[in-house]
Amino acid sequence: MIDENKVIPSWTEEIERQLLAKLAAEVQPAGLIVEIGALYGGSTVVLARTAPKARIITIDEFSWTPEGYPTATKKLLESHLKEVGVKNVTVLEGKSEEIGKSWDKSIDLLFIDGGHSYQYVYADLCNFAPHAEVVACHDFDNPIWATIKEAISDFIQLHPEWDLAEVVGTVAVLRRK
Image (tube, rainbow, N blue to C red):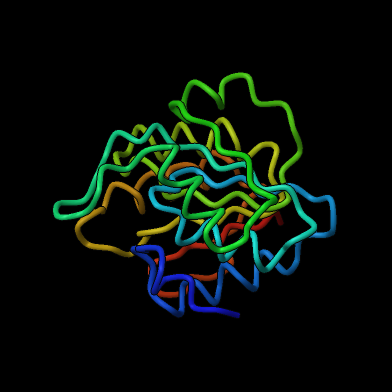
């Protein structure tokens, strides 16, 4: 696999991208992967290339741009995906909290890496996880974002059908029991 992160910036570590690839490889052809928080598409490309016959929907409101980087936009994300030959991704621009309120599609893999506040993460879990088989959340053990671990812990406590299956780097994987 080409190292797309030399082309597209990513805030995931190599071990985390390997985990995402492993999870995406579990998705059957015609399955659905939903990513919340695409930014420039670094993790999007990992998911799309590993599961080329799956459908990927990525949701981002493009409200955050890291200092020193180009402004994150839907157009820039789509150009990155085109540049590396990814064709199985649909980009939805908007707030995941709003999109999630009316979500009704089954999800094989949900990857949450959008808004990092407790409210955003908890809303994403409550809105999308009921439709998902596997959930991965970035920045779980990141001390800068303790809100993520707190939201996941509260979600699992209120939803005993979910189990924290593993943590690789700062990516927590939740699986149904």
